[in-house]
Image 1 (cartoon, rainbow, N blue to C red):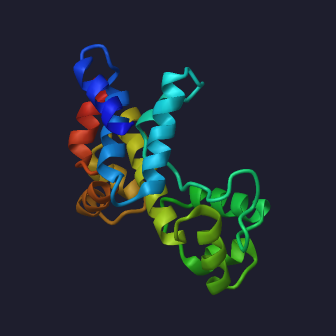
Image 2: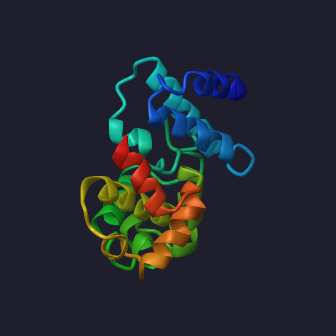
Length: 186
């Protein structure tokens, strides 16, 4: 299925929107390392092709953590209110240092129990989730501002541009500068 979509998209490259080609490429690159991420990318491709009302920005941003159990809380996971409070706390404090102890306190759990429950709910560690959200914010800032990558790194709670570049390459498989040029042109 993925290879058919790639073949069709490549043969119609002039008519295919760049973000669709990028999503398919991301799915192809992540298929071995992260099947859940691949499913998310393919879901975004499916939604786009079926005309589902996806926010255009979500088409190019790194996806957030994917819940394991659709339709309800995961067994051993966080309650909906806990997950919502943790996500809100992370969003408000992305430009600062975020400690696991602080997140556990927000969820009213011990740090060890919080980490296990968070992983069960999101299929990601708390640290992995925070880093993913920092990269998403960096992507948003790269598309919506003319700030330098160094300024964007600081606004996302990262130490410097090199730190942003290392994490960005790990999560997006591209450098921030190259990604910015691709998507600003699109």
